[in-house]
Image: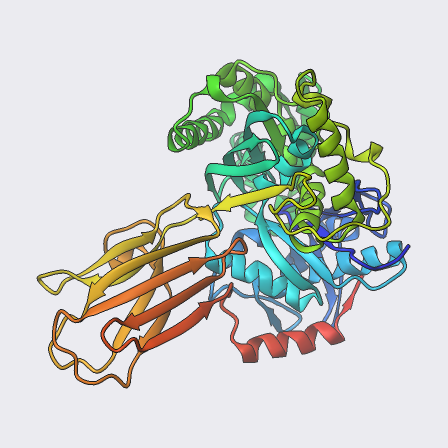
Length: 549
């Protein structure tokens, strides 16, 4: 196999990660890890100052050496002052995530037989710029050329919807992973997949369901023996693993038993599926509330949704599927692996966005053209699968969303997950936030605003770029600034024009122009996760010397 055009699509998950690529026939393929498994636990065990193991072997060490095990690091992405120490060395969330990605990169190269540089990495749709930047930095530290960061539900919808291109369908993507949750409404219109609205919770996932079961069992033990197994790390981790397996068992069985051993005392706590559902009912209600919020933002009702797509392993819980059936009146889509669909979709998005001459593009375009010729009698669901598409050794140039030679193009559009604004002074010289790019604005986009100098005699102006919903500085995050200086003294009220250009990769370019002199200052605000150039270089050196397997 040639390495030309290979891009890894990576689902960097809270509990499990997966990777995929598009083969020469246009078929997205999951790449197994070094142990032959389609997913890799996002778990790290440090056993020396310079050595660690990632994946299933690390999971085995959770109980016996819990203080040197890292789990759920995705929840800390974007936090500037978060560090964990192992054997005297401190690690940021970016570095820890990079270790997981490095393991995946090594496994991919071993499976393919050549070096893989390019990658597209997915994140929850509601991740802010700091969280996206941290993910980008992690990929860079792992040795990848990160072409783009895309939203997980967008990737899942692509994996499902690419076989339904040419029709009109509305999708609700319900993505409940191990540590994060989001809901996204997308539409397929012809050959365009477009995000309409999204929302979610970085602190809600399968782990929270696990914790409810663990706390229930621990309370039963406490009542019986007056001792709490949550008080010590090793018994806690042992109990957590048993509760996790019991939760998985309850997805297919009506009852599970959980043994507890602590300080010489033993008991077995039985749990029924009904009890588990009762323990987690409020978490399920949070999920249902988020669905209602997203539908309201999309200006839709459940009756407008054609398909409900499940992503994330936690959607296997019967209570989740039953709740969605009750709310939507529809059976969630079958045949889509919730553990793999995000990685598969990321690999397809990578080809559509970054490899215009990949043979897969020609294969999809040919299939779309054939479907177009029979559209009067064909149903959207009859669109041929990627596996049936022929190889195309050569293909004409294709730009994303730009048809050529009379054949349809595939367009994947996303939206601004968070509004972008500017800090201004009102007539009373009080700071307030003005939104230039509202939430859910389709990307790419360009927005302009006309402002004015607040004081007489100003020779410079500072434009502060904000992210988030709010009317004052404390309610939003300042993600960058542009300073236009070396101006002649400007009287109050002299106009200033500010232009925001936001790309599909959520890179923001800002122009600040003094309207009268036409002097302009431009700044590009790329995804940054908080590590300084010096910190990135130091992390690179540590990664280069690390023994990761």
